Amino acid sequence: MSASRSETASAPVPDGSGAGPANTAVPEPGGDLLAALLDGMDAALCAFDADGVVTHWNREAERILGWAAEEAVGRRGFAGWAVRPADADEVQGRLMAVMDTPGRQVHEFALLRRDGGRVLVRTQSAGVRGADGTPAGVYCAFGEVHAQIDLERSIALSEALFEDVSWGVVLVDVDLRPTVVNAYAARALGTGRATLLGRPLGDLIVQGVEDLEGALQHVLSEGAPASPAEVWVTLRTAEGERRRCWRSGFLRLSSPLAEEPVPLGVGWLFQDVTDTRLAEQDADRLRFRSNQLHRASRTAAECEDPMEAATSHLDYALAGFADHALVDLAVGERLVRAAATPAGAPGPAAPVAGGGIPVRYPAGHPALQAMDRIGSVRDSAGRADESWAAERQWPPDAAHALCVVLRSRGRTLGVLTFLRGPSRPAFERPDAAYAESVAVRVAAAVDLAQALGG
Image (tube, rainbow, N blue to C red):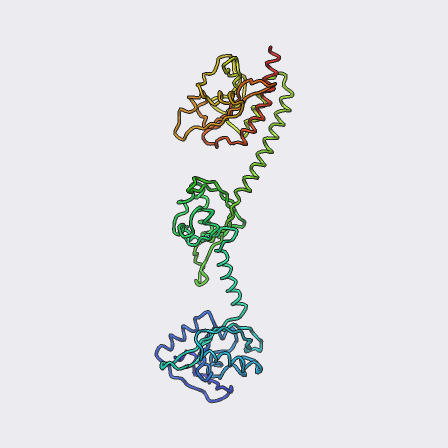
């Protein structure tokens, strides 16, 4: 075996019994390099020749046990200094036995520190062969068991995170491109684990990618935020676009080998909480709408004019629900505009001055369909259909419509139409249910107005 820096020291080197003349070794070519490599290792390392004499002892071994290289090199085994006498034969036998067997062996020993304390170490040892193939010695790498266990736990945790756990884990590099993706994250993003690697997040995220990349960039420059953040995104998938909410946590990853903290990227952990958030939004929306119906009923009860009561119901219903409302009453075979909100800008509903002129709805108009079906009809403009609202005799800023029939005492009185602008989503089934609740109250007020007027 090559001589290390420890072997070339001028200090006396003890023999196997702990006493004897000093040994002076002649430096071999490359000995300084070998000593530097051994001393730079993170693991403690020692080596024995075929007779069990210590030939190498690096600085990590000195740190763990407290014995300097000058005190260790030249001793025969650990007996009398680094292990209890009762354990010496067993330890020496197990270490040297590896010299005659292939591969590595792992053992745990209780060794003695220089100050007398005991430390449990885990060793990996393997035999060394000479140039002629005969056993020449043993090398042994060891570390404190608790440190080894901590390392194993860290590795096990890393591997477990990238298995099929109940949250997504994505590692992104400093260019914000994914480098590792677990199975949950791949499913959430609608792609394969390997497909996403190295691709910009914008390839899959249609909306919200700016917020996500901004959070990742902030973590790289400033560190992880104090609490998780919720990010709404719209994904591009084979089935179309999907809107999702991800509760996300971020960790800045730095190299443990660099003297200065060098960012390696960001660890992004997230859970899909879309269903929970949508359920909460639905509950909040239902609570608000119920409150609006209650307030509208109280206000309408104080109105002397039944048509004023009808428009009061519309004003409360519009809040957070629609931009415009139209009331068209049936007069014979035609519909006549009775009340409406301002066409140019949002405002309160009011009776139409000089009413009585029929509205010119073409055949198949959603309002006429609602009367024929005695139900609700939803309609929306296409993305590039600028004439959609004009053809239906609606305000020009309308992009989504919901028509519900006005019924009272078994009779169809007309149609109530709610309209939304292009910046708002289309009406959905829960919206139709709310609009029908409003229509019942408006129809009762209209019926009373007609009865009093007649």
